Image (cartoon, rainbow, N blue to C red):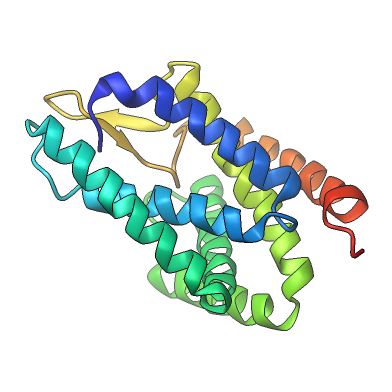
Length: 199
């Protein structure tokens, strides 16, 4: 969570990072790991601060972001497995959000995360391309919804801090999964044909 003044700049950074990841994720995989490690670390660390502690949220977000980025960049192979597991968890949430309500069953998330991690290690190049394309596409959608100002990707608390919910960006918008699939397929095609080709 961050102060609301950081909502628009944060959303724009999500769109830019998502586009970079979607269309050049394989070529820039270590950078992508750093970006997503930073986002994850910042989200986790800033959520540990009180909603009235603006300075603490910012400092914790930056420190947590740097720690998350360093962890994923230096743990390259673990990062590949985590990317696969994260993609599996994302698929579980998107699928369940489309056919069910609430959170998906824990066993479904666990099974898809494990399958994603195993697949990432066995088919590194292709899994990296597909996962970065679809992960980047999802980040573009989350950031785009937030940039549009629809408050679909975040929820405000009583003090109106910006709390990002990246796995459920737009409850009630049935078009989001379709847009994600189309953008992810375009990103996959671009990476396979141009940016992710073997030299």
